[in-house]
Image 1 (cartoon, rainbow, N blue to C red):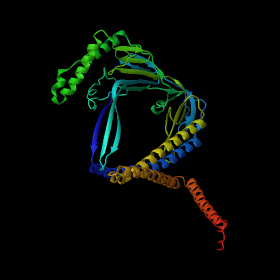
Image 2 (spheres, rainbow, N blue to C red; image 1 turned 90 degrees about the vertical axis):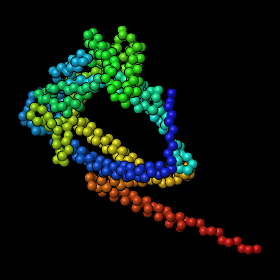
Image 3 (cartoon, one colour; image 1 turned 180 degrees about the vertical axis):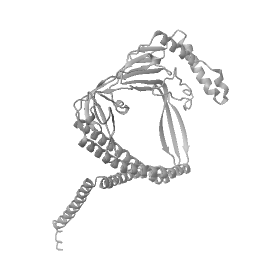
Image 4 (cartoon, rainbow, N blue to C red; image 1 turned 180 degrees about the horizontal axis):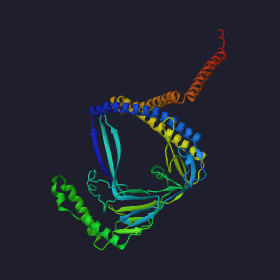
Length: 438
């Protein structure tokens, strides 16, 4: 059931908030402008570094042994990324030959979600209706429910056990006769489930520890300011233990999942789910600078670093193209973020006009719509101007060419409009002669 809270803001408070909004809007506008400028420079530097790397990279067919003749060179090669290391997760009895071992932990918790609706009042005030809803779902970390608005859900969250996420890399991963450094190991993907085989003794120990962790330590109540909060949590745990009973199995193992709770098929608040996965040896393709028997980043003349690893046997041409594609995608994403910051900043700065008119809500609504349109248009124009100037600085040849095309287009459109006006005047039908009076 939803919980609703209503608050009222006076006209004076709204004006004060709008004044603060001007400052916040200015910060957003400047941040968006700086992001747009920096992004264009970043995109060009990255593209130049990729092109430079592509021009000097050499393909090596065989990397089965260390070749001193390619030391210090940027190479492209494909080989089997292998390891003999055994990675372990002792608390779950896992021992696997793997390049990576990952433990992902999820908690079943009440999560508070809010929906806010604002209503203008005659006289400039504002009524805010906030609706709080609660949903139990799997999340990546325990949720503190002590600050929930609805007292019915406040303090209801707890966890049967706290287990940390963990990611391990094999110390030694070979690439033919070479060793892969950590930054290249991290790029090897393809997670596969690990078969968890916990012993009966381990499961029994986990059951014991969970019940023990749900017990009450009287020393925790020494701080009187937390007594009410702790009492509610203790009661929640006590009730849970009473419902479960002493003989209920609290640890369930299936495939690569360890489940802490009464039933994996019927999750309850407090349950914990641990998933174990691994990355096994596989074929990979690498572009990196050879440094003895290992690799390092290639540093371009502009200071940008470049290296790359992809799964499977991939040609150098395709790998460099993928790098360009990723750079282009990031460029457009950052452009969009920059434009949104600029537009949002302008709207926040102009919001004082809307607030001044809030004494008559219908006028404020008209002004708000107008400000939204104006902010959007000005924001997009400003963003294009910043990007255009950045192109003149970072891509002068393309920037000047585009500027010439743009100016030529404007001149052409103006000349067409002028010619059309002249033609309309020339071809205009003269008015009929006046009729003679009878």
